[in-house]
Image (cartoon, rainbow, N blue to C red):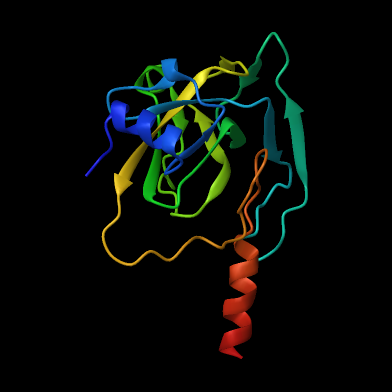
Length: 180
């Protein structure tokens, strides 16, 4: 069952859902619009290795004139809003108006975990050069009712602020160690 806009508002006010800052004009019929934060992160190494930390990144602050995303590049952005819930399952998707500009947003990992609270890292991939701006409505989060026992998220991205690079290598190291 998906929450309606009225229920998203009620849940944000009674604490079942955390959205900070909460703006009533960002509530849709069954989702909440999230805005692009000011920081982008890109990997600079010619090869990204899933089994190794990838410390070679470049951070870009989006200025008042925006920033032009380039095709063939992965940009990690973040939401302005800190969003989370200990009650509902959040799913984040790009807004259709942004998709119509040729920008893929969060297409590989839209589901959030119950118990995660923080800014969401956004995977941004443009089809053609596209100027983006801090604060633009870039995605929308829907909230679903969970059935069954809840096991809260306790993962490596908890309380994230700003874009977070992949920490997959931590999981890979544990898997390799367990196999020995």
